[in-house]
Image (tube, rainbow, N blue to C red; front, side):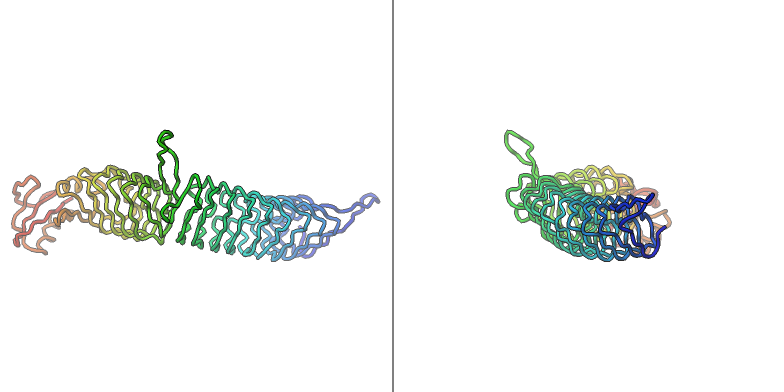
Length: 461
């Protein structure tokens, strides 16, 4: 294991013959964590794969001007390096070359024509990068986790931006995507929480539902005119995917796939895509037009919604649709809702009022409200359906069920129910739902006539 300062000789003698040192071999200084500096002779032309991998103590390094090749992961994990100059003869940076070099603030890429995936991932101090014009592709995970990166301009010749290329670049406030880019991969800008504006060129034909996940400070989204696949019609501050559903009539289907806190859903949109508003914490209210018939999986998961009204055009609330909406206090479902999928309203700690206007209880499991304190919330239902809701899980789990001002407050037993009612006023008569008078409060729903002339509905479990 090499430690401290090391000087590589320009020549070595073997059996009386002198050999020039032209390369540093694969894994030559692999995991030499105690290595602090190294002198490399001008004769060296090649740095092998993993040559200095995880040399965490290496703080300075100068490569000879004649180096033309730097191998895969050559400086992976060299977290002590504070600067690096790429020799002019190097045209390709292999995958993972500088992965985890946490202290390098800038790097000159002039002359580079190709950069492999993850080459600069986790370089958290990197804040100044100019990508060379010769690049035609941004590799997957290229700058993933570069939290210090503030702005980036994609070169004009780039056609594809790879998966997660800028994922978790939380300091990124501006990105310029030029005309000519055709494809942007999965999670490419996920967790870029500093981005406030997004402009998609007319040439982009493919993005993923996860491309802009959790860009929760986006306030402006625009798609350039002439894009055949996407638009942002009516200045809606969203990306609308358009596709032809009838070749004869040319009728299009419209699907909102990326939204932001200032989105206004245009009339005619038929579907809100999965994860469209994922973790959009700045979104507090949103009008869903009657044209929308489908809400995708986790469409509003983790958003800042405080209230939501679901129109009659929607019959199913998909999985995790409104899960983890911490500010959600009021939900109104139309009479047409028939099914609520697992997790649809899970982990909504501030839910207070849930209006379900369907006379027939929508199909749902307890997981639809998993980790949501429905026992402290009020469920509002049609008058004719109170009995059904109060005896059907998970609706029966709501602490209070209300219909036209008549509250059904579940009590654990008759004695507790009587005590609660006596505290509000003296009980005069007790009836069941069929209108038959009873001598006492029984298990199930009881209609109570009070001395003051009011009636109350009480559920005893």
